[in-house]
Image (cartoon, rainbow, N blue to C red):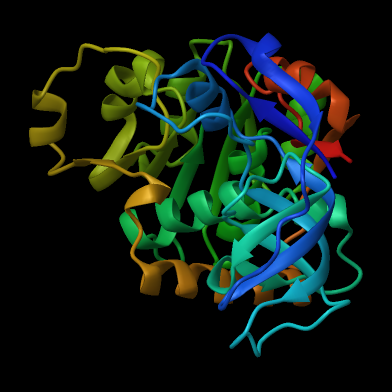
Length: 319
């Protein structure tokens, strides 16, 4: 089969398309023929060597949509021919086939496409964990989603709207803001305009947001604390550097800054997350948005695109 392989840390150019043997599932494993593979920002950090040592060569990727080709001994939840999405991989998903532990494979309900399935794993699980496991958001609260036109942002808008939250989303382009509005946000603001922080206060009758999902804490965290409601929570999903804050902004509101990483979720938490996501896909409350599809051979370009501003949905590779 064909797969993207990394033999050394470096820039996107180290992603090489190669011919490798087909994986063979062992006990408790599922072999999935990949119809689409999702691109996530953290995969660029792994490729660059920012996440510590790795065994070379390796194939990146954890998210995919595809068809079960074979199962190992003891696997009873899936059979050959089942449509699934993956949220983890033993051999990497930037490939024609991927080997997964059975607990990281989940049913993909019709009419969800394979490309949409590749957009579920990391983005939707991250958004769910941020909203409901870390922020403990409750129906009736107001949530500000920074960068709402990206994969995690779209997931948060859809999940929040389905849960009875009032959603304020931000995006940097007209097309991005329209996309966020189409996904169910009650209000959409231009995050390139510094005045949008004051607008959040106006939209909440002076109370501020109960929850803020922050994708760029290195830019916004100090300002976020000034627009939180009493007992508000900022959930730090992403940051690319340091930031200065005024701790008094947390004191006056009894506010919390809570970090989150999907990698810290326990097995039981992950099972709960994906039980909710599978149901959301089945009842169409969740509708993953695919922004771009590229051939597997263009994995390097895909990793460049995922780090550029102005995202509109998920970038996926098609083997």
